[in-house]
Length: 293
Image: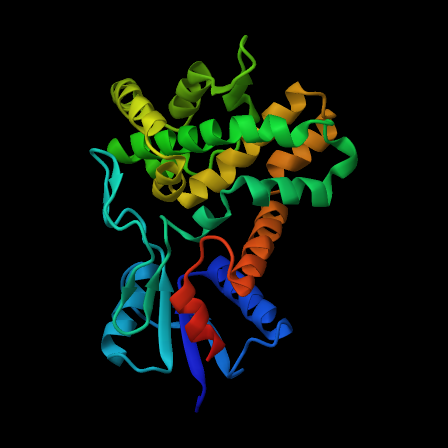
């Protein structure tokens, strides 16, 4: 029978990140109580609903035990998708100890220029152009806003599941002005390949035209948090690879940048866990405090 504390998360990636965070806290001698078990929703036998619902249902049943916590995706809750706007621009905690991600999902924390740059330097330092940091800094806000636009337009036509795992470097191109942009013809082709009919493709473009100027005039943080995290995790690295290819990165290395999702995830999540343990950047402070015991 368990006598320690339990953190219940949705899936294996969430568990991997939380375990990495606990290790960071332990390495920094920040754990007051090292008695934690991390389980996933898959560990709940015969439970109905999706993974988030399973975690939230069990949290409701346990009734606020200080030895139990849940960590779930916010998804699109408390975002006004019509405006668009963030109606809860902070970390949400449901009493007692049910923690929401700050944005759509845990991957949203990793959509930062610093984490992307650090990952590139860690894995491909000899293949980066001399001014890589300046190039990426100029392009990154546009990349994040484009990812959010794709996510919101896909959500609006109820086809997000068809688009969120797309990893296509040819979706991105550098235009005559040197700006990285989405190739809309290529995007339409992808939608067609994914079984989205002409009517819905037209609706998608209507929403694209609707969201693009609104996100462009809003703080880029809105795009970071409102974007579907899994979609951004796929699309951001394709965009970065396309940009670096334009500036001379060899094709073989470019392919590694956009195709090795597991490598990028582990590298960026590690950086984020280090930041959490150090109390830096955007992180769920109350969850970290609970983890420390």
